[in-house]
Length: 193
Image (tube, rainbow, N blue to C red):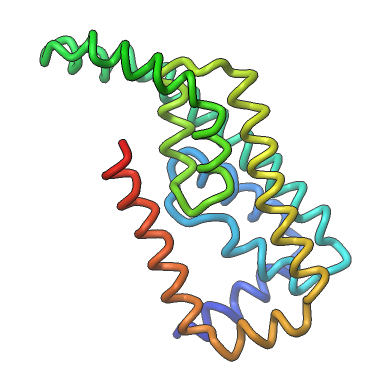
């Protein structure tokens, strides 16, 4: 089954609408969807190495745009949902202190979440909730997501054929590693936040 999914993803990567699919997944991953766009980015670059930079660029732009949507979710929904809950439990003053601390380190939080398996969507929403400066948020997001996706694209562009062979030989192991990293990111959220 895993092999069929991998082959399907490679076929999708060669499809004429693949960039739109990548843009969609990149956008929703940054605000609500749990699966990172690397699942489509990697096979797309492997299938079309000559388009690696375009693919990484589309992934970056869509991901940062999705991050802005996540920021908007945090900023616009907090007053209706989050604030009344904090007021009910008398945590408003503690939240103010947390907000100041978060905003002092927010650029680093956004950058780290943008390049690591830590769920980026959590940081995008949290940045909106705490009203992290939108310029700081945007710059950190562009740098982090660009670094991540262009680095992956460069590695695949540079070492394409051996990388594809490596992935195909160890598909099960790499899939398990991906799942562990994804779940590890969500566990980090629980203990850090």
